[in-house]
Amino acid sequence: DSDYMFMATKKGIVKKTQLKEYANIRKTGLQAINLRDDDELIEVKTTDSQDEIFLVTKNGMCIRFKEKDVRSTGRTSMGVIGMNLTAGDEVIAMQMASQGESVMIVSENGLGKCTRINEFTTQNRGGKGVKCYKITEKSGNLIGVKSVVKDDELMLITTEGIIIRIRVNDTALLGRVTSGVKLIDLKSGVTVASIARDVEDK
Picture 1 (cartoon, helix red, strand yellow):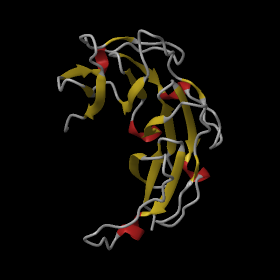
Picture 2 (cartoon, helix red, strand yellow):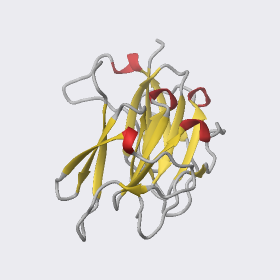
Picture 3 (cartoon, rainbow, N blue to C red):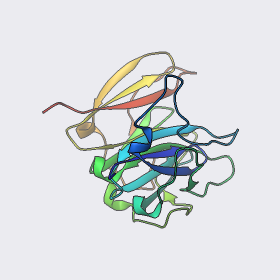
């Protein structure tokens, strides 16, 4: 009863449903969220309704709000507005404040940085958020965001299928409205496709 599935879509819609609603899944699956034709699910977390949610967009905007601001709804509902997006922007990542002490932000052209979570003040759900990354022609749009601690490692995967591993400790700790530093050398026409956090098993 105390656990939830928290979902986010690229259009800034968020949804929270009790985990027990997914207890009996049929072979053909269950409807988990009702999506508009132009929307898609980008991230799902298991939560306890006590956390704080981060949504980050490809154009470098971010919002932090309390999970309690989103009321629980049934499996087939659409959810509510988590972030008010400007035209052409979309959400590319959802993270929780409890997952780390900083957020690691990576752009498609291989630039990135860490910014402390406490630099982002908690706002009301549904706002436009604040700038978390200075998008430039050199950086390109954001491709991924992960909550991290300094001992974590991050893997960057390119559109060519090349993967590199970097230590969070070795990455610049920079303020919200900056672009970051080069994390990976990319050939012309190649971009970062995705990132993954690698947590050492203690």
